[in-house]
Amino acid sequence: MQEQPPPAPQPGTGLAFVPHWDWVAEKGLLPPATARAYRAAVSQILKIDDGWEDREVQGLDVDAHVSRFRDLSSLSPTSLSTYESRFRSALASYLGYLENSASHRPRGRRSTSRGDGKRLKAKGRGEPEAGPGEAAGPTSEAPTPAARLVVYPFPVRQDLFAELKLPADLSLDEALWLGRFLEAVARSDPGSSGA
Image 1: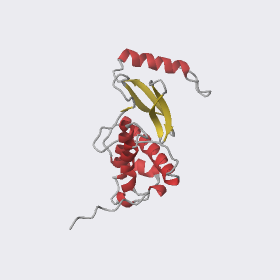
Image 2 (image 1 turned 90 degrees about the vertical axis):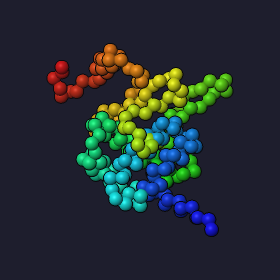
Image 3 (image 1 turned 60 degrees about the horizontal axis):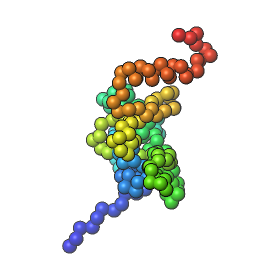
């Protein structure tokens, strides 16, 4: 007698949320590295609770959950910020998918080709994550090794993250130059006395 395959996880549960990013990568909706990065963040943050598999993600108190993850984790502050950013992006994307799976597209970068055969980068909609066991940190968004750019999430403010796309082999001089450039483009705070 053949064994029956396990039933599919209930949509909207933690057990469906984690492998969702494998499906996103398989369908080419996001670069595999981005999907793996989202998957890793979702998996690590959800698993701080017993029974995470059956937990409904739609009613999740994200701030409280992420705060508990920070308290229990031994990751560096930078890695914690990266995981939090990815988790929030992945959850927003997944909730959009649950609302309308037929037309939902994850936000992220997808490669598209023009009629002349040259490849372009196009922004899609949705978010991915990374696989279990992968190190926290930046994810490469480039589809070929020639690009060698890495995307770093950067917490600008408590509720705002930016992405810095930088060379994988960024030198110290280049990093210092980037810092000076950012100082030049920043607005000064009206309440500050200046540097």
